[in-house]
Image 1 (cartoon, rainbow, N blue to C red):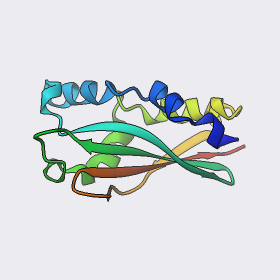
Image 2 (image 1 turned 90 degrees about the vertical axis):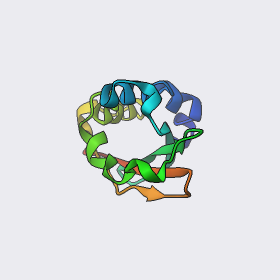
Image 3 (image 1 turned 60 degrees about the horizontal axis):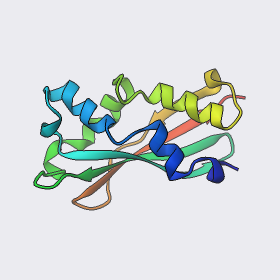
Length: 127
């Protein structure tokens, strides 16, 4: 069922494209300083969990490799604009589970290519 719930349209509604600009504005005082766009993607589901990823796509004229994406799991975990805790609650609700039953963990940044990096997100349900 999860694969039918987590369409790209649903994911984009939960994590809109302009959130990357807001994130960079908060970090650097201007969205134009950001080296990448952030997109939430659904990866799959297992017993008691759902896997997603934050895909980082290099912006034109910027260097994704130079932008220190390897520290992002720790930053994303705490940053209120990224709001991973709220995202986990939205996923739980979409699956008919109590929001407080959801916990999350972010994996190490993966370099898919020089232009695309990925931060894995696993949401686990306690019920």
